[in-house]
Length: 365
Ligand SMILES: Cc1ncc(COP(=O)(O)O)c(C=O)c1O
Image (cartoon, rainbow, N blue to C red; front, side, top):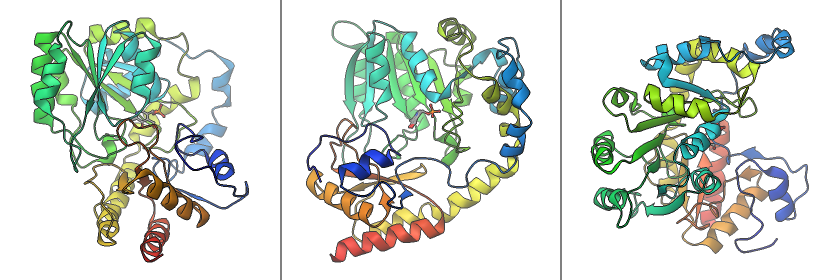
């Protein structure tokens, strides 16, 4: 085993790299608590749909097909011209940065590392605003000051709601306050709602009607457990969305992904089964982990953050879980967490029971 903060893969789900890092065989059986995907798996009808969809690959994706944007607009209560379908939520993040290339960006951290990477890619300078205290709270006054800046105002502010990896939620009223300030400072708020469908809170979509400086980013890959499909979207004012469309690569979203938007969104049964699963695991599982003596901030997402007390102890717990066949997500590449915490997905009751058993055993070890 190589201790310390090196040799950690950047994203979750990298089984092979982590097994090699801890000297375990490549076929070591693992339950993946590191990825934030819906444990229900993709909708059951998907494989039939895919086998009937081969002919879609014989043509380029049709850029004039309005069906996907209309399906999203109808579900979210916006106009189709406020919707841009993207190659995963990731492309939406990069387009939001591209729209403000060369500007000054604020990133509320710890959070998803791609915001920083996207800003770096498009020459934005990045200033980190840290969530504070045990419950990862946003210092709204500091955020407002940082938006105005000392020499130049921030062109955009990235914020994730619920936040990856903390699971915490900035209140809608706080967002409204930041939006009002942003209108004065010329700052666009980019709120990543990749995990909003897992939360009990409302999405910010209604605010789009009154806030031209609000951009919402969504991912369909988490909710429908389809990370390989690459499907997400951006919502914003028609002019801002048109700006992003102008910057998007041609045929960026493949024909299968485009064809799946409407049927995925129409699957109300899948959503309701997801809600039933969530009600069974949250807040129950985080509470059970707390009852074992661990610190876990309140989460509104399909994952939780566990305080390992320091990076060395978190790594020891990570290795202990891995040996027992449970893959956690390290936090070395989350600014401000620096490996001291572990992120753990909420899964089905059998897997969650294995996790709780292992965490109890670690306490007794
Ligand atoms: C907060 C957040 N936004 C966006 C993404 C990217 O999602 P997608 O797979 O749709 O590109 C992720 C992936 O982990 C994420 O955690």
